[in-house]
Length: 255
Image (cartoon, rainbow, N blue to C red):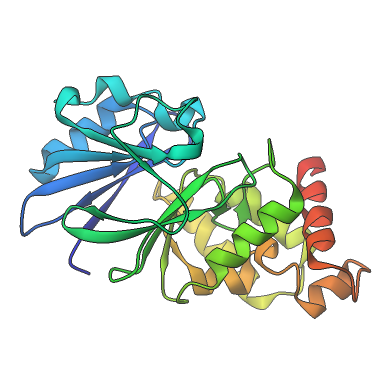
């Protein structure tokens, strides 16, 4: 990987991500929940922050923007279709666009569900995907705006990426997601093993993100709505996977 990645804890349970190019010294940040930790991470890395990538409009992903150092010189990038409720954008993007970030190509993927016009940013050469609140470690974001069909379609797009892609999601929700996953899929040996690792990491105050897409495919129930064994466990064999996803999401909402 020719880009460096720094996971930056913010607020109570948010994450921002600083991407750095060692060859040029320039850096970008994905989402801005809180300025101070991001400024500190940029300074500690010796980076020159040039770009801000916003995945969606929720306050806990954008509210730190004006507190970033050298704010006036930063290029702020976000979804064209969501520009009306994002901070002022210098560059707008849509599904399928490829943009240059820190000298590297990044593909824009529409991952509507948690919100409409939520985007993910995918660096194919570096196998990095910034999914914020769409695909999360052992979970997915609550559907505040989108339909189960939209969210399932979005997750299928992400699931189709190379399995060794790093999934950089926006919150430290993994332990609570793990408890739900275990209740839904109690005989999944890989899930049980992962939960032990997650609990050990949190006991040591370490982040559980990023994770790998391969691990999510094997243990995250929201990516397995078309898995025959999980469908059978839910009593929904042969059902439309979008309906199975809706059932899983509804159970999580009530969990």
